[in-house]
Length: 272
Image: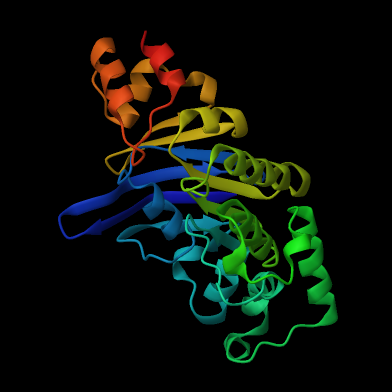
């Protein structure tokens, strides 16, 4: 169980995430939705301890995550793997080496300077790539791959960390629809087959409805919805995405929205 108690993050007078209380049982696939700047990325970075909270606490199975330091913190970040929108691969390294870098936390900080990987770890990397449909690219430089292929390699690297939680920060925001489907299919399959908890930031409600059993909606740094996708009302969706209550205004806002904050076609139907 991952538990957040009054967790918040502020930058001076700006509240990136207001006091938040959430419980995420093991094995859930949670979609976090909201506009750009709503606080979705801040939430994930707090969970991974890439950002320190201003107040509050994170607990995981009885461990105070916010108090971890040194090796314990490094191991938490390994078990709570992060997948980024921009892939964060090393372009000049081949794919299999990028995947093997997911083992660095298990080796210790000195191994990052001159990493040496065992035969068993190399076999793990090949299996992870094969699972993501990327084994054929193992010895290509990462920079030669398409965006969708790079994101699947990034997921394979995260699996090498042997995580209990996968955090995906808008993993499909820069991908075409076909590549986005492959990436989301992979995350859903990992969740279902391995029982790994997945918390995924998403712009679009359609994607959350298709893949997630639970949706958390954030607006202006505050959790304003937490429940099943089927429980989202048109009024709540308008609140999460910050569009007008009037249905006509809602339709106009949706059709003029840029990629920075996309609104699904489904939302138009909900507002009609």
